[in-house]
Length: 343
Image (cartoon, rainbow, N blue to C red; front, side, top):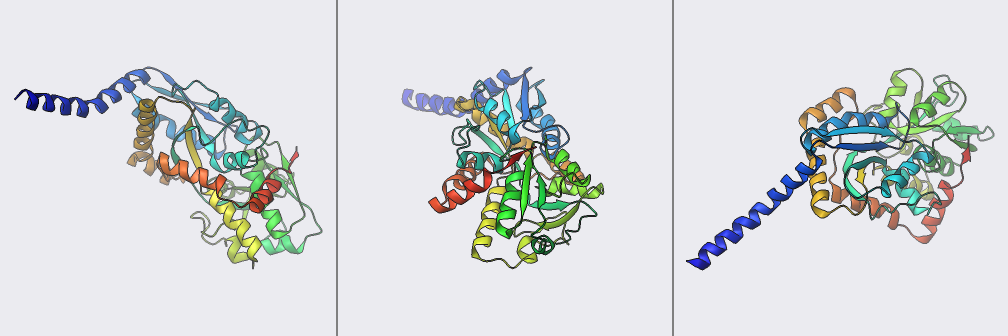
């Protein structure tokens, strides 16, 4: 009988342990302020996503938790990512990261990149979407073929940092299509980069389709092509680059790899070294927030879609984009993403 009672008590204590850990973590976060860092200026796609999801994350972290959005523009988000990587491992600092730019920066061993995506605390993917080539409404570039045929004219592309999605996406496009390009970095975010194109200061910009949708709807830009194999839900009549241009094997690989990296999307991370129980609690809170039907509906209504991917799948996809390359392929990618010019 004593053995039976002991076994029952042991089973009950094991079953209660996760609930106790959750209660302890909820108590830790209750009443605290959590910073959600954005590596770009206000008004761009990452900033809008952060401000949309912040209240839902706060609701799932504990009682009276306040999640505040902090814009820390610089180097295409790398400056902020370095700070978050070095932040205290307490779970009170999170960041919505450009997975594409972060992966490429680590792949290139960029001097300004002092983070390791294998060590950060992955919380999940917020969304991933195709990217789009935009020009001004009155641009003579109507199709990719127009740009190819006018190879004598230099095309000016606006970017934020050396590896931010905007500039490195432009670099892949220029390399694959053999365009005469100049990529200028230094704009705080996609919003300012797109405005520069609409004003005629720049010729083209490479942005996510969620951001592109807003710029095109406002009449500031026009879509030339979707830069992957899948059409954008916002631009169903705009051809993909694979439909618009007959590509050889090298060109196909460049655009396919680029699409693979872009599928990393907008990811959520926290600083490395979190206690396992706290990391699990944060991951569960993010999962509940990003699968909340109210948030999903809000995303559909505002066309800032939520396409949640869990933390472990996000981590594996990130590492695969960095590690699954031959030496020659890595050399080519690094060359493309490290030759941009300051504004």
